[in-house]
Image 1 (cartoon, one colour):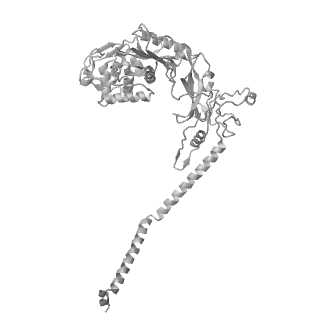
Image 2 (cartoon, helix red, strand yellow; image 1 turned 60 degrees about the vertical axis):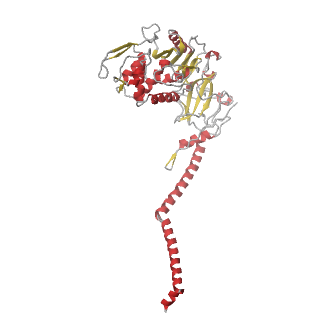
Image 3 (tube, helix red, strand yellow; image 1 turned 90 degrees about the vertical axis):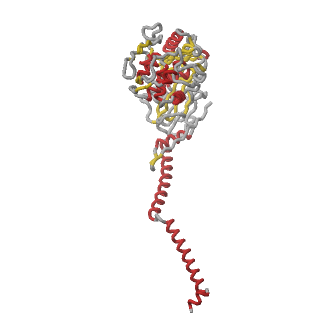
Length: 501
């Protein structure tokens, strides 16, 4: 069945100017623009199943020993593999992903970070540190290296105080705000370094969402893959500090992985062994999150997930494969919801949008629906693609000329098929004549209002003190009446008669 969708109306004007584009938006969204090609409604939020092994025709994933795991494609946010991905877990030192992002974004790398007594002595016994003392200082860059290479807790505390204006609590609030902005729905941070707390938790899926920003930062990725932390003596601290990176996937390590672009590990007794890693091959960037696994098994599982993703999925251009929607490129075409008659194209599909496609299916197997929520400035709407409830990507419907060499599903080499094939696709049409007529009517109304305002202002300019003049006249009349009454009283009073004589 087809479901009409109404979007939000936007009306933009300024200083008497009536813009055609906002009016086009108003007319388009005021009517049913399209219907879902498959007749199935999906939530706008990115879908993630508890276990992808239960999805029919989905590529079979590897067996992992982790309590929860997820494999996500970075550019789209699409999930390729999911195992208890929305179950709560403790992130341990993987928390450094968020701490380092905030510090890198809000500070200059050369800023000096001074270590307070709290930053040094709040580190519990047995927690990784690099023995910085109270009053010493490191640069922001050195602190970032310390927490990403070695997981130094005192550097995480000091960075949090530095960014939070001396308040660690303020920084934690920033962390939770950043998690919410990234789309995390079940994440709560209570400290910047990942110390165990019942209030410090996340999910594999949420951690992957945070990883999308982290792995897009080349500097942080580079720091996380350095084999050694080497800090030289400086005015801020007098020691030469050398620490080894214990990541098992580095070059020369037991589980080295050639496509690795960055990673961060974590461990506490309660969290178990954790890992977040990013890998890129043939233009596809994948993020693997492993929660509560074995010490070495986490690396094995991450590599198995990367190999699975690169072998069983491909990124395809949505505009080149979309045939479920007719964006109105044929003048004179009519369909079941052709609401504006003869038209000419005003919309096009974004040629840069890509969709993650499992190799076990073709593009036409995907479910799709149109949404008008959360659209950007040039977007009229978005086509959302999914399969089995799993979000796979989107394609933006843009205002403007159609993409070059794209026919929106129409075979130009077989024109006779247009007449013979029943029109079953949803249509999007814009009637220029109607748009111009409505634009003229609205413009006339606005001009009339402006003319009235101008007349009123002109009248006020000619008679700027009309209220004061009115009050003066009223007071003058009242005064005259009082004088007359007083004169009559004096005339008929005894004193008045004597005066008269």
